[in-house]
Length: 475
Ligand SMILES: Nc1ncnc2c1ncn2[C@@H]1O[C@H](COP(=O)(O)OP(=O)(O)OP(=O)(O)O)[C@@H](O)[C@H]1O
Image (cartoon, rainbow, N blue to C red; front, top):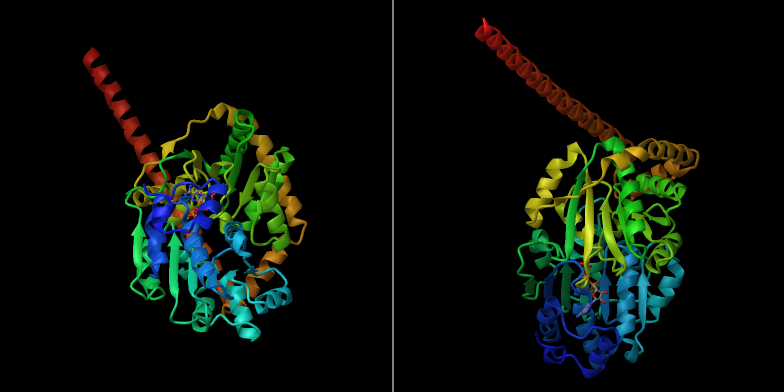
């Protein structure tokens, strides 16, 4: 493997890398850095924790050092926390340049941001919604002359998921020059490749790691099959076990909703675990503070929604627990990728209920690896089951007495209106879908019950036949 010098990186940047302990390029860096330095568009699809950020930060800094001006580069990313992390990489590696960066994300003061933008920073790192708001409402800055556009977690930015970025991206793409270098990175680019090519139009170089398996070899991937009602007891048991055996390990627990995230955090706190929660219903400043506490290992357990699933680079994380099975294999890949980064080892455990087994099969098919069973002493779990369930119920009641649900409803309505949808109509649609889901589940349970009964009857018949035969033989 060649060193950074052979890739064409200047000595000052190599020195910066060395100071951060980055001495040899990773494969994605080795392949993409020369191409970017050569002026080509680039799409890099490499596994989680494989150094994709430096693969675009380093060549951009080199180009900036040759022709410094602002605004030189725009980086788009799906989450606010990730925007701060990327800006930090630019700042640390670009220190000798006296780099000026600016972070434009929702939840922070817009006036301050507008002022910073008007001061022509070299690098702008932004989430799409807030940057589009600035473009629509202000003419005190221009991104018409940027040299580089980077979409980090590019597939997520183009996905029409629960947060749809596509309209804001259209506004942003309309405000930047057609003549630019476009760099697209993610651990899961492949299914949005055609869409991405419409953004990186300049005959993009595409690099994908050759390995069939979508997750890193250093990651031990496990599952535990659990009935829904004992899931929390398993969770508490697992955390206790990891805390007892590995005092210095940090753990991320992923949940499906903000409410579950909040309740689980309250519950773990009741059991005196050092946990913090991170979800989109928290105020932005609180979100940053939470993450800072977790990153500095003051709190060793982070309970988060998928807002933390992508990109976050926290080397102390040794364990990822999926409290719910992710519905999309891609989401699974990103969640479990919060551990076992940059060659370190890690373990991911997914709690799977009987209704989610098909999801596990889909995940296994996509990532090309089978999850292994994680052995748990059930008797230990049973010992704490009642206490855990009672505590959870108490936490639910406590949360109900706050305005959490009300806030959530308001946020949802606001978002729907912003998306141009009718909140009442959407609520009706959702209720109908829930009804169908409940009916389906009931139907499934009924089928299972009938099958079980049939099996029992057949067994009983066989037993009776045997008895009859035995009597006949005796006679
Ligand atoms: N060449 C290198 N040698 C050693 N460590 C590196 C190298 N390049 C980057 N790193 C470190 O590896 C870690 C992971 O890098 P990074 O966050 O860029 O991963 P990623 O590929 O973007 O992952 P994800 O898909 O999860 O966003 C970081 O802490 C980074 O400093």
